[in-house]
Length: 110
Image (cartoon, rainbow, N blue to C red; front, side, top):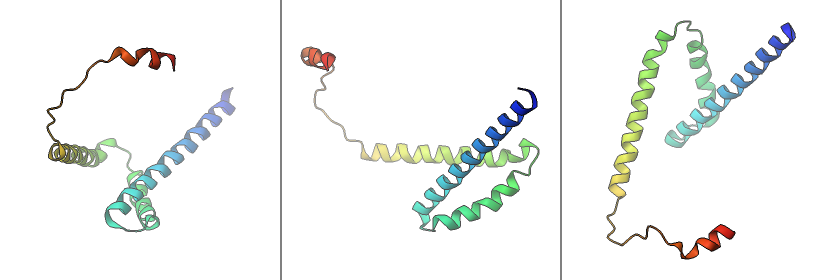
């Protein structure tokens, strides 16, 4: 316990945060690569200086414009998905069977 336990917990937190950050950068690079065709390596190395500047900010209120931009992007993505869903939606007049208990014994026994 004591100081050794605190150091161990802090080391585990640092390792997990490095893993999260790495996964996030790879996620960003994969998505930008799908959109633009730029190699993932270039995107990863391009993200690092931007993120290095952002982590130097001590006050969270300086990050609020980025949070607002992320919220707007999420809403725009949701609207785009919903619009594509409605464009592809086809009305079906077939009768839908809600419950069919004839195969219930088979399903329960498997």
